[in-house]
View 1: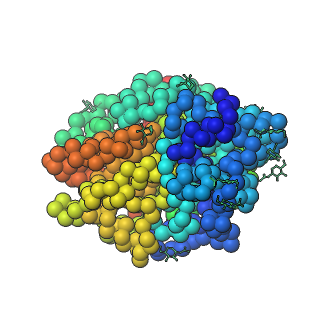
View 2: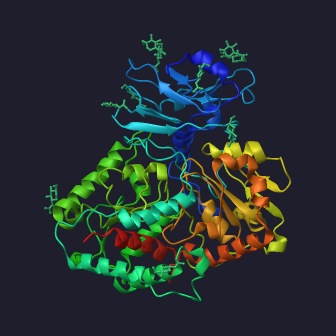
View 3: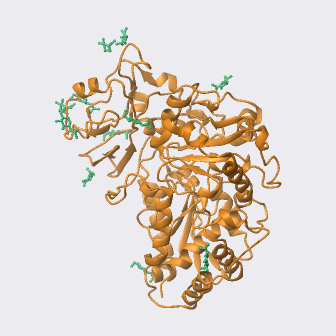
Length: 585
Ligand SMILES: *[C@@H]1O[C@H](CO)[C@@H](O)[C@H](O)[C@H]1NC(C)=O
Ligand SMILES: *[C@@H]1O[C@H](CO)[C@@H](O)[C@H](O)[C@H]1NC(C)=O
Ligand SMILES: *[C@@H]1O[C@H](CO)[C@@H](O)[C@H](O)[C@H]1NC(C)=O
Ligand SMILES: *[C@@H]1O[C@H](CO)[C@@H](O)[C@H](O)[C@H]1NC(C)=O
Ligand SMILES: *[C@@H]1O[C@H](CO)[C@@H](O)[C@H](O)[C@H]1NC(C)=O
Ligand SMILES: *[C@@H]1O[C@H](CO)[C@@H](O)[C@H](O)[C@H]1NC(C)=O
Ligand SMILES: *[C@@H]1O[C@H](CO)[C@@H](O)[C@H](O)[C@H]1NC(C)=O
Ligand SMILES: *[C@@H]1O[C@H](CO)[C@@H](O)[C@H](O)[C@H]1NC(C)=O
Ligand SMILES: *[C@@H]1O[C@H](CO)[C@@H](O)[C@H](O)[C@H]1NC(C)=O
Ligand SMILES: *[C@@H]1O[C@H](CO)[C@@H](O)[C@H](O)[C@H]1NC(C)=O
Ligand SMILES: *[C@@H]1O[C@H](CO)[C@@H](O)[C@H](O)[C@H]1NC(C)=O
C-alpha cells in the first residue's frame, strides 16, 4: 500500500488528483455566498477574499509528507494516505494536475495560504477513494478523492454568478463508521426496495411508555395502508407518485391530525433564526413557516406526534465555524449540548430516544453534524446521500432550491414548448466535485446537441442560464461536491426534464414521488454514453416525462402562506410519513 510516491506519480501522469474539496471549499466558503438571479448580494466574508490564482505555486511537490498510492492499480483512482505518521502536523492539500494544466511540471501545489487545511495528526483510515485524516482536534476529515478527473478549472471560481454554486463544500467530517455493507452505487430501483423494506422492518425504539400519540400513529398507518383507491384527482396526477392513493390518504391524515411541538429553547442565531436566501434557503423557509404555523403546531407537547428542533445548519456554520480550523467539532458539540438540554428538561426525548424528533438541514455539513447524538431523529437533509448514512424509512430528502419568488411563486415558471426546445441537453456550472470535470471532458464542445459548459459568463438575472434551461429538452443535474444540486428543482421550474447524474443521491420526497416517471437518472459511469442514453428515449416517452415535470412543479414551490401540496407541506409530509411508518407499538 505504501508505494513509492515518485514512481506512482509517474504511472499516473495522465491523471489528476484534485483535492479540491477542502481547498476550494475553504477558500470559497469565505469568499462569497452567492445568490440567485442577481437580485440580492449578500456576502458574509467579503473581506476574506482570496484570489485563487494567487494560491497556486506551480513548482512545489505535490503533497507534503503524503504518500499517494493506488489501491487497486487502477489507473484512475487515487487514494491518499498520510505516510508520515510520526509527524504531528502534516498538510495534505494539493492538486495533482495533469500536464496539460501545467505544461512545465506535472505537479502543482497550493501554497501555504491554503495548505493549512491539513493539520493531521495520526495514522489514517483509508477507504476506496477516500482520504481520512485525523484533525488535530481528534476528528476525522474525510475527503472524497476524485477518480477520472482530467481538468481543473480554477478560474472563474471566484466569480460567482451561476445559479448553482455552493458557498461551502467538502467538509471536515466526524468519525465515520465504514460503510462496508453499502454497495458502490445504490440505484434508484434499489432505493425503492430499501424504502419498502424499511416499512416492513424499520422500527424506531419502543417508547418507554405508551401514549395516545403512539396509538394515533398506528391508526394512521393502518388507514394509509388501506387507502381508498384514487382514480382521478384533479390536483394529483397519479403516475408521478409511487402510490397516489397512499400519498393522498397520508396527506389528508397529516392535515387532520398531525401535531408538532416546536421547542422554544435555544438561543439565536443558531436556533430560531431562519436564513431565507441562498442555496440553503429550504431549511430557513421551513423553519419560518413551521414556527408560525397555526394548523400543526401545538403548545401541548403531550399531544405532539413530532418534535421540531429548530436549528439552522447554515447559521450553525456561520456562527461557530472557526475559519481555517477544518473542524466542526464545536458545531457538533453545540448540537449535542442542545439535545442534552432538551432531554434533561423534557421527558419526550428519552421516551423514544429522539425518534419522534426531527430537524431540517440543507447545509452540506448537516448529515455529519447530526450523525451521532441526533442519529435517531428524523433528518430532512438536502445532502441526502446513501453513503453519508441516509436511512430509508427514517430520513427524508429535502429539496435544495433558491426561493424564486415567494410572493408570486408561479412567476416566470415554465419553459419552451417541445417544438421550441432546440437543445438536447444543457449543463453549466463550476467544476465542483469529481463528476463535472468528467462530464465536460466528454461533452464540452464535442457535439452541437450537447450544450455542456463550465461556468457561463455572467448575465443579468442569469438570463443565459435560464434561457438554456427553458430551451433544452434535458437539463443535466450533475452532482457538485455533494450529491445534491439546486439544478434538479430549477429544471422542474423551467420545464426541462432533469437528468440526475449523482450516484447514491436520494431524490427529494422519495417516499412519495416516483422520480423515474418524470426524470432520467444516469449513473456516473455512463457519462461517456450520455447522448445515446438521451437519444434512446423516444419522443413519445419524452413528451410524457415533460408533461409530468409540469405536474410535479406544485410540490417545489414556496408560498408565503403555505398552500396545499406545496413545498412546505411536502417537507412536513415526508417527515410525518416516515414517523407513521416507523412508529412502534
Ligand atoms: C516522515 O518524517 C520523517 C521524520 O521527520 C522524515 O525523515 C521522513 O522523510 C518523512 N517521510 C515522508 C514520506 O515524508
Ligand atoms: C497491481 O500491480 C502489481 C504489479 O504490477 C500486480 O502484480 C498486481 O496483481 C496488481 N494488482 C491488481 C489488483 O491489479
Ligand atoms: C515533511 O517532511 C519533511 C522532511 O521530513 C519535513 O522537513 C517537513 O517539515 C515536513 N512537513 C510537514 C508539514 O510536516
Ligand atoms: C518552475 O518551473 C518552471 C518550468 O519548469 C521553471 O522554469 C521555474 O524555474 C520553476 N520555478 C521554481 C521556483 O522552481
Ligand atoms: C518541475 O519543478 C522542479 C522543481 O521546481 C524542477 O526541478 C523540474 O525541472 C520541473 N520539471 C519539469 C518537467 O519542468
Ligand atoms: C496546526 O498544528 C500546529 C501545531 O499543532 C498549530 O500550531 C497550527 O496552528 C495548526 N494549524 C492549523 C491550521 O490548525
Ligand atoms: C484519530 O485520533 C485519535 C486520537 O486523537 C485516535 O484514537 C484514532 O485512532 C485516530 N483515528 C485514526 C483513523 O487514525
Ligand atoms: C396503492 O396502495 C393501496 C393501499 O395500500 C393499494 O390498495 C393499491 O393497490 C396500491 N396501488 C398500487 C398501484 O400499488
Ligand atoms: C433523559 O436521559 C438522560 C440521559 O440518560 C438524563 O440525563 C436525563 O435526565 C433524562 N431526562 C429526563 C427528563 O429524565
Ligand atoms: C466575472 O466574470 C465576468 C465575465 O466573465 C467579468 O467581466 C468580471 O470581471 C468577473 N468578475 C470578477 C470579480 O472576476
Ligand atoms: C474512468 O476511467 C476508466 C479507465 O480509464 C474508464 O474505463 C471509465 O470509463 C472512466 N469513467 C468515466 C466516467 O469517464
